[in-house]
Structure formats: structure tokens, C-alpha cells
Amino acid sequence: MSSAELRYPRQTLWADYLRAAAGVLLCGAPLLLLDVNRWLAGLLLAGFLLFALFLARTALRHHTRYVLGPDTLCADGPAGTLVEWARLDRLKLSYFSTKRDRSDGWMQLSIGSTGGRMVKVDSSLDGFHDIVERAARAAEAGGVGLSEATRANLRSMGISVAGQEELA
Image: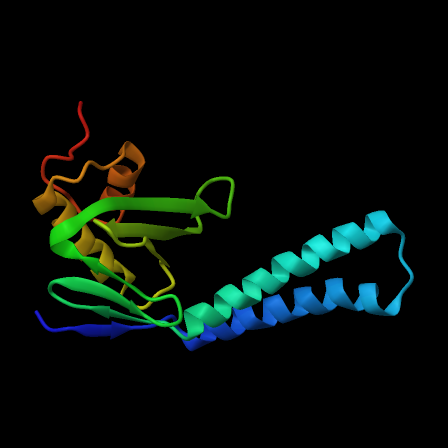
């Protein structure tokens, strides 16, 4: 297996940059241009900080590339880290619904290997399914325990992990 370089799609990143900039502007401008009472200022400041963090996270995603190799997943960027498949000890696959009927949403994979920091990627990342498949195989080989929610989310992606089947 050769290495694959994966990134978040530019269209997704630019949409996030636009959302973050709009939020920073809409929350920050009244603080600078208007005389607002302290309660409203507190709410606007909280919104400003939240959107500023979202902007920073988007920039971090923009400047991070993921290299999926046969032995590792490398997050190469400002907050880079390395997950060694042979030492994988944490795997969590979460689903976040955007609709009440759970018909739309996104998935987030959190993985880590012994002694390393967690890597979190979401389903908008190009090659997300490949990373999840590789992580599931590594978890199976290493005997990593998976939560019921993670197993259900893996099944919904068409990925089965031996020894982690749902008990009937």
C-alpha cells in the first residue's frame, strides 16, 4: 500500500472561512462602533470569540495535510501529530445529526496511538472513508475495544470489525 495525501476540499474551507468572517464581523462591529450595555457586550464578545476560534480552526485545517500510509497516519501541519497503526489504542467514530430525523449530518473520527495526541478528522475530508477503514483494521488487529455507538457508525459506513459484532 502506498501513501495517500489527503486534504479538506477547498470549497468546504472557503465556505467555513466565509461563515467565520461573517460571524466575527457581525459580533465584533457592534462592539467597536456602538455603545452597547454590558450584557449585550458580553454576548457579542462571546459570539466574537466563538467565531474567532472557528476561524482559527478553519485555518488550521487549511494548512494541515494528512498522509495516510501503510503504517501511519500523519497530520502534517501547525499542530501535527502521528498515529501509528500498530500502536493504535483509541478509536471513536461519532455521528452528528443536523436534522431531527437523523437523515443528514457528518461523522468525526478520533484516533490515537500510545504516547501520541489524538487526531480528529471529519467526513468532509477527502479520503475519510479510507482513514476509517484503515483505523478499523488496526483496531481489530490490536484488540482495541470499541463503543456500541462506534460499532454502529462503522456498520453504517459498511465497515465490519471482527470481534466487535453487536450481540443479539
